[in-house]
Image 1 (tube, protein in one colour):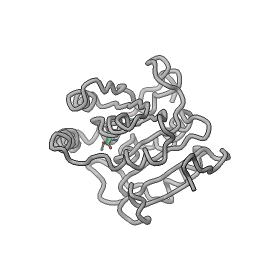
Image 2: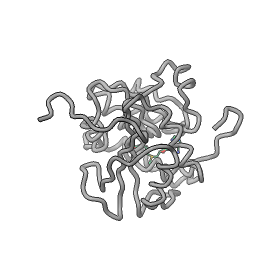
Image 3: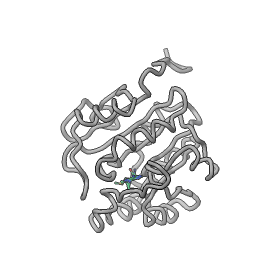
Length: 221
Ligand SMILES: C[S@@+](CC[C@H](N)C(=O)[O-])C[C@H]1O[C@@H](n2cnc3c(N)ncnc32)[C@H](O)[C@@H]1O
């Protein structure tokens, strides 16, 4: 997306009131000591120690916060000002950047004093079924351009019964968009605990097409 072009409103923004429950609901769960770290645990398991991680569509900040607690260098971006405000209430000092994926270039991140390349880019909790219409491929390309060499992307969304305002994004269509963005699917699972694929939820691990694949890290048998 060029600097001149306006950023189209996301499905999330257009859903209006339908989205208002998310922030307070998660804030309440966090205040009640409930576990909201499922996505972050998977990210931590597949990330190098002390990884640079971009949490794209960070919402009220739960994934950013959970990953920082696990020692990672996390930048969270979130375009909804009410969620940025909510994140500061729940996690004082979390400092999410008020950015849309479609405007998040290395230059913009550098201007904010943040890393410009990431070992992991994370867009979980339905971000990809709440993007603006017809921007999915562009969002994948923008995020791909933020990956460090060998970097990977974790994306998760509902395949059925998604949140208010969300689209249906069948696996075949997502795979086509991934390929068009110069990425490949390394793994498709049905949950953040890596259950088999199913009709309800999809978790995708992506990497740049043609990049070197697979090596086990220290401690691997
Ligand atoms: C259901 S919330 C999930 C938030 C967070 N990832 C989580 O799991 O708690 C969906 C989020 O997608 C974000 N979103 C939608 N389109 C976006 C875009 N183009 N750029 C960045 N975030 C976007 C919304 O602002 C909202 O915060």
